[in-house]
Image (cartoon, rainbow, N blue to C red; front, side, top):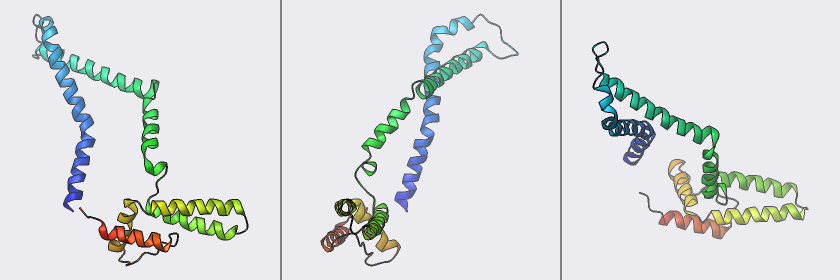
Length: 184
């Protein structure tokens, strides 16, 4: 519970970081530029009792904010660089390229079993099903599958969730990995 609460607060900090960062950018750059231009506002009379210094600072801050937003707009609309960024993120994510999480693996296993039974005489489909079985067996050796099995045992209360797509040896390895798993 403590870990989850801490991570939620960390996530909230990350989400507000953009706005806070923008505020710091505008404030810092405004105060860096002000000494260079403040002489222009010394000779101007107050407007409705407000010192022109405030108008100058607000003007500089607004200009900087508009400039930063213009860069963001160019990045998004004109150059579309975020699209390439998302492509790279997807390419680096093993769960979109070669790894499977356990729940999806179970669904794939069920689909594979149905396909195998529907086309028992088709060599190409059987070859494909054999590949899927090998892929599922390999994935079952990954830590995320051990964590999933451990969670199923703790949450669902099932002592031995039966993973029909795994060989006896694969199930034994997975159960051994669950036993060795360190919970943090």
